[in-house]
Length: 443
Image (cartoon, rainbow, N blue to C red):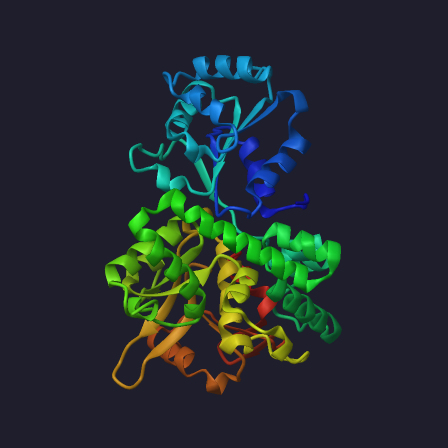
């Protein structure tokens, strides 16, 4: 693994400087870089002799520290005896990794906030949701953040293209991008499609420039995810969970997922449960349909209709067994794999850049009518109102579903993300795919 600037570092900086500092809880799938991000931030902000990291998965004995009473004074005293580090010093930081292995440690977070607010207390875990069955999460007493794979901008930084990453975040979206720069972005985006954003996959790629080695790592990580099933699924659930995990990538891009599409021989209740388990393990995100004509988008959500975004685009194409040798060098990135990769990429970017309160809530528009179903890939909050987002190539005149949405709701903004350069046609703003994250950032 390697240390690069991550978006989460900005959140940690703002948190550490806040007057009302609650324990910082970092959530996300395994191997998205949570531990390395915290260590990297601590290395720059916390004296080494005042930083203590406890990994409760690896250090089983440390779990006993949270089995007595949950008085912070008692816990800190025991931690000092256990580690030899004094966490009473100003600027000290306690990092509890894989905190779900000691559920009482999660409960203890509220008491640290109430009694020792000066301590920099960070907790992280990939399976936290599964530890909440018998405890109450200290809502209102902690500050939660979800972490995702490297964004495209972070990937550019890792590749030594910091200037492009900066430009990606700051370029005006009403001026055409220089064609040479536009083509460079598209080539790098194609690389990102293959490598994805799992930090170790990016490191393997940068060290070797060998896509076969990247693919081998993808396979190893997916095997590790399968091994995790036994940590949170009952024995009689694992078969359905494994089947669901293998089938989910084939459903990315489908505007209306049905349980029977996973496996018609497995009861729908088991498929529903398996999707929930995958979601709680942060392996996928369900995108729900919304009919909201004003904010919040959740007010018009219809949970009956949903589609799926997988954890990472690199892992997605590996699970699909996609053959990149069949893709021509000048292929349109919105058409590869029937458009599923482009939709996955945009969803991944929107998730990683969304406001913390909405971070796991993506929406799209789906209208079912006899003989004329319609779908707009995403609906986002843009400058105080809903805005439709289509992810596809094509001119303004060929965007039938988007035109239907515009006619019905009269949105202030409408977007098409494609391989085209920046352009405005009537009320629709065309943006290159690589600017997807700007829609979550308010431009």
